Amino acid sequence: MLETVYDVMQLLKRFGTFVYTGDRNADLILMEMEVRHLHENGMISNGEFTKSLLILRRGK
Image (cartoon, rainbow, N blue to C red):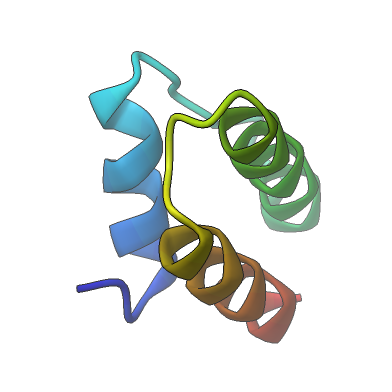
């Protein structure tokens, strides 16, 4: 279940994506881009996509 930014990071990690730039805002932007790419390629569900975006935008 996705509830926190950490959960989104774990979702990305399942696909071999690690995001850490040292700048939280930049990290959130990069994670959003990666989540979009995963969704566009059919690798995550609509529910995971929507929930991830809400979490990442709430974190900004």
